[in-house]
Image 1 (cartoon, rainbow, N blue to C red):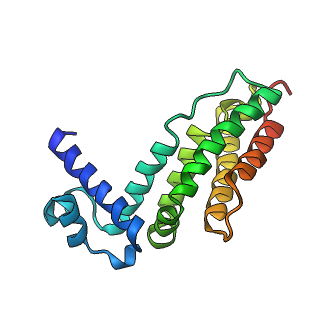
Image 2: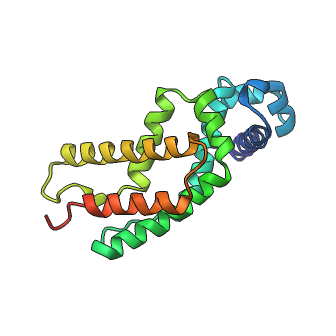
Length: 188
């Protein structure tokens, strides 16, 4: 992508994030976003068909920040795997909690089937250990296990964000780490 397009897209996403942190998507207009981003309405439409699409893209940009330090953990097993996952999950859930209002607004006002499908895919590629399926499994079976597990993790995170009062990130990280380490099929 050309540098000007990248800059204008980034400015739009930054504006959407800032505006959604301040208020609901239903209170925003494309004109407000374009003004905040210092771009024109046609430039906005060059990148996004509507505000909901921009909000979803902004959510994934923020999720990328939360997942920036995720790393593969295929060499770990047992307690080492559980501890590693707990630490990584705690960082992610602390970030999500810090931006809770933003993520809830995007899910409730801009979420669609494609958004949640992309969320499960992202969770599967960035959070679910690659060895969650038996090593002798077919690629199709391994992908099915990954998507199944990623869907469950996504569901836990979505419900955690939407529930009042919010369970401490530490407790959710512990539960997820225990689940992942318990369900890991490596060596079975």
